[in-house]
Image 1 (cartoon, one colour):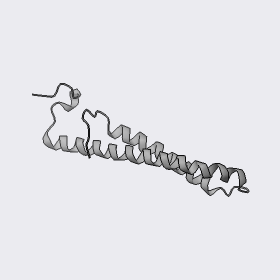
Image 2 (cartoon, one colour):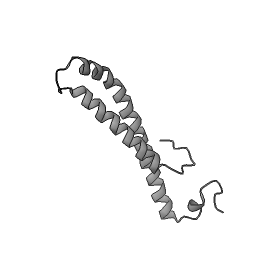
Image 3 (spheres, rainbow, N blue to C red):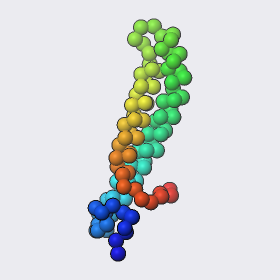
Image 4 (tube, rainbow, N blue to C red):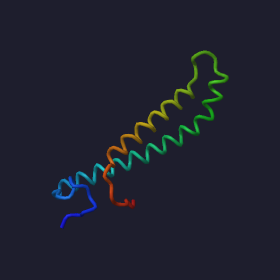
Length: 94
């Protein structure tokens, strides 16, 4: 009997398709965790980034560049993770 809570496209999957779907969703969960960790690090690095922007001469601002890179990585990982994890109906317990 198909699961009525699952989306229509996922109700009649073969066992191999279910394994692929589960792998995709777990990869999405991993990317969400990485995205939140990158975001937290970007928040911490922003403390040095403000000082770097204030006191560094010219275009030499390495902490600002690291902060921008971390923020970009956070946004990309969160977006990609949400896309891969779409349709999740269960709670993962790692």
